[in-house]
Length: 170
Image (cartoon, rainbow, N blue to C red; front, side, top):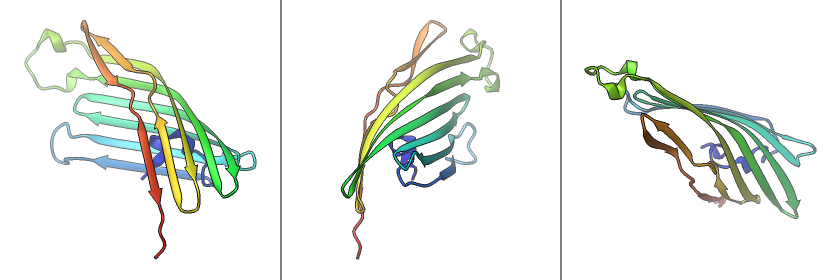
């Protein structure tokens, strides 16, 4: 429901100020259930040619918490009845495991909390007409690895997103 999460080219696309907050509580009632909060805002600037925005994502699954903060910018070209937008996002991904929240017998593997922050860069492009929207993006271009207790943990890898929509009036 919020294309800004996976494509920075969406920033300022509809020539208005937009703000969004959503919260998801999956498997409510289970200990350590996944929750996600995302908040974003974006606006069109410079005679509707430039877009700017801010995106904050917070995920929690059990003792693992991930927080992302990204600044987004886009540039839009008006071509006849079509808008082509190119976007970029830069930010930081903060990861944390809090082992004190576990109810287990003491184990050396779980005696020290883990936390790290890594930079992130993402890019995207999209095309919009009155009836059609299509985009391609790579919101996490930098692979995010953490080394904890002598083992590598990969939080994010590169993913490619292709999306589209079409409006047909009845």
